[in-house]
Image (cartoon, rainbow, N blue to C red; front, side, top):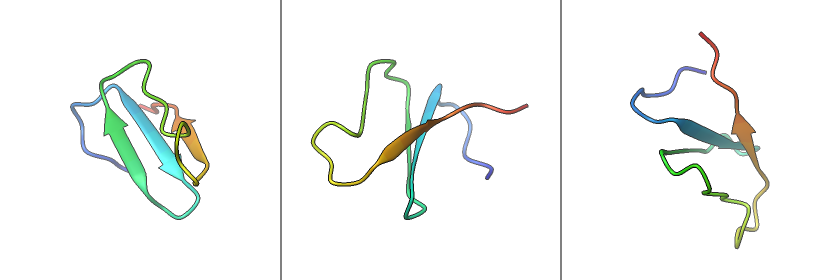
Length: 43
């Protein structure tokens, strides 16, 4: 999956949704009913 650049962190949900952020301590699993997994950057 290719995502827009300019963000340091990316999270993916099983339903194909993505969250992009620069916040190192952001965790979308807190307060969410979905399971989010942090994505690793590939070059």
